[in-house]
Length: 310
Image (tube, rainbow, N blue to C red; front, side):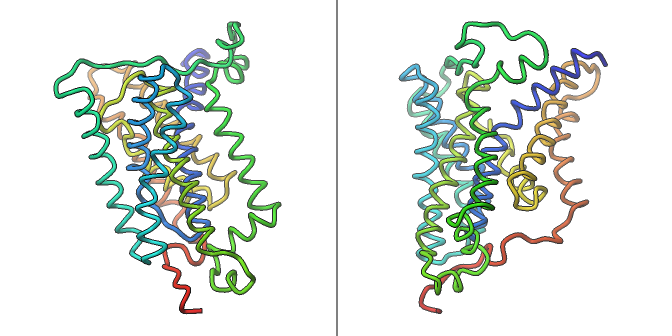
């Protein structure tokens, strides 16, 4: 196991963790407002497809990312209306999003390109080093310079989230909605407004997480390219104890497991590749079993808020 192997593995872990960070932050903002959203997989799927199509049509991956965010918001408004306005069961509608959105993405792809079409590819977003016209040599240079802008955005969002939830009045009001919405309402906090805002943020971040895969990571879109990342992000929120810093550590861990299984597939012979593909999911189950649910998150998470009951 050479230094080249280790350094490449660590660099890959950072890239693989990026979509998980967007998805996990999406879930964190949703749960902090009292909304358990298990539909991240679906939101990321539609964001991935829309980001790919817009990037292909415009030739601009950044527009693809923005379009992916918009698509995530639009689809998540179905979940928001059902669970916030109609007070429907959050788990049921989250699962409905997981069924509906990937199917919609697959349908749009086949309508646009036709059945049995050739593999279509797009240009990926340039790294910072490429934009600056320099070559990043060495581990440190590659770590800080040989990354797309979306990687920097993901880690900046973690810092912003830590500050927002712990150092601002608005962030404390936001968390109060997820803890004690009726008490928050008596203090003049717009509970319904914050829940809808959380749904917009969740949809946007999940859509960006999906669009990252087709604008910054791979050059094409295929069905199932999210590959369970939405559920791993759910585990990362629990692993991180509903704290942005902890979520970052969890995402880096799961990103490392994902990068490791890819490199083991390449370097191993006479072993079925499916064995290595199980590594991230086994790690998820082991972590959840080891950590458990001693801290169950925001007190009102998953519970409908009915204003007339005040």
